[in-house]
Amino acid sequence: MIVYPMIELQHGRCVSLNRGRIEDPMIWHVDPIETARDYASAGAEWMHLTDFDAIDGSDENSELVENIIRGAGIPLQLGGGFRTAASV
Image 1 (cartoon, rainbow, N blue to C red):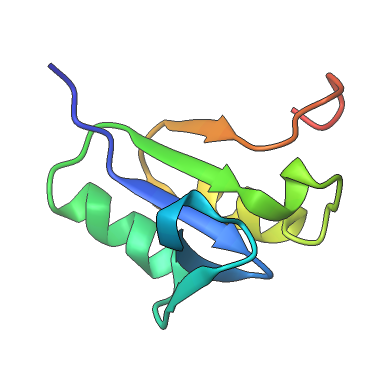
Image 2 (cartoon, rainbow, N blue to C red; image 1 turned 90 degrees about the horizontal axis):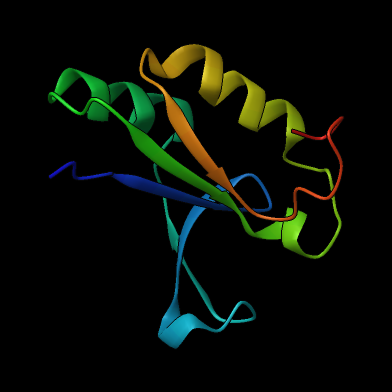
């Protein structure tokens, strides 16, 4: 079994959704890139990253997502609004 630690992004911040409602996020005051590195340092072999803004069609987190991918040091599984090959 592989356990995937997860980061969920909204407006450039790490969040968790209260009861799954996108309009009611709980904000985690942590750096997303450092959090990804911490997961890898703790032994994670993979990570999952969801961009909630991309679900609504926004690309405001695209640079941050790219920086997380490049900085994590482990493979990432991505979720959230990938509608074209170019966005992937």
